[in-house]
Image (cartoon, rainbow, N blue to C red; front, side, top):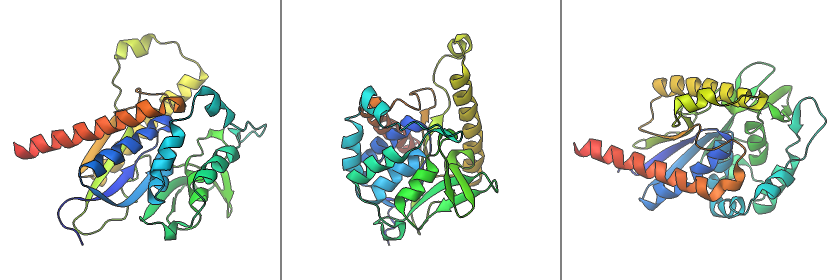
Length: 268
């Protein structure tokens, strides 16, 4: 068992396309000699974390970076269902072409994904079963993706209950918990946001970000990570997947700056 502080229990938060930043964060960690021993994620964090645990992060990254606006739109299989605008089947099918489905218990790295059950109002943690079933449930943004119906549950995006699941990652003696929150404090000018025109979509997104921010802060106060890396919630839109390469680099930069700040504090 490694005891040198280089073993990481990694937690990846939700945030739509901003979650692509997790890829850069992981690459920066590994380039500095850290070994990721376990992963837990919510929503896009569950997707990136699942791809990492399956040993397919590089392939996934390459695919994401090919997406332009047209390709992103083509992945949206719109539905007439009142449960959500998008079925979500097309996205999962595209992912399965890259990486075949596998049971979570057989992944090379312990993995957990978080979803929420609309029936009971409870958090649901997937740490066994099919990888894509877990991911599909965790990314089901209410009103956008149709929820997943399973065993009497109606499962939606885990960000509604646990946006940065620091209490769901498997720990090992001597590890360090590193959490990446891509719904961090706003970086833009408050006055500019106050003057911005509002619509239904912007109201929904802003309200969701506030809720997730408060939930994440509460959870992190009770289960403090050793290192918290934050990307501002207003840095990228939740559907800007066509900016993947840029977002990957933003994640790499955020991790690098967080590690450097920590090193300075330790040296002082």
